[in-house]
Length: 287
Image (tube, rainbow, N blue to C red):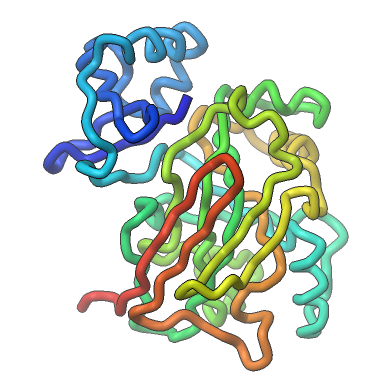
């Protein structure tokens, strides 16, 4: 299944994407939760009820609606230096490569729709892209071993871990440079894990104005999804709807000499095999 949240006027509604249509789940079963995070928290029975509701629910052309982020999490976390190719390009800039996984928070206020604009902030021109695969957590999880991690993954989606490089360097946590408003576009929907048989080897590509900048595969990851979930759940409880963005392959703007930062008018497209694509126009931050 492919879950999306879309706007009906100013109201967001939970839908299922089937082909070129979006299914309004509430019209098939008014008792269903109204957000994906709530649906995941309600468990397997709610997921099956959503599947059943699709048969009698209202359908709309997908092109007629505006999609929002598929899920609104309590935690939006990102992994730094998650791909070997990215490690090598950063090593060439003089960066010291840590031995362990490096996680940072993206504040949830940075969440953005899959086709909505991203802002060049007023305080910096150093806007960069990072195409990434994002995991959505499906159930509460603490002290999960790597071998058991797939059981807590609800699904996958595309993410652009948009980064403001000079603000990333202001603090060792990187949070400031990762959390500007609009800098967390995700989507276009969450594809459930049962429809992604081999997430460990998918192509991931990023284009800027049609120029291919990142051309990687998830098989180049430095850490497995299981290792990521084991690391995080050793510290805190992962909750239904939490987003884990799993790192980016080589080809980011700061890795070029000189760096190639994003400017207003450019369009960034991130596509992952089997998950679809997100595409965002860059604009100056409104006053």
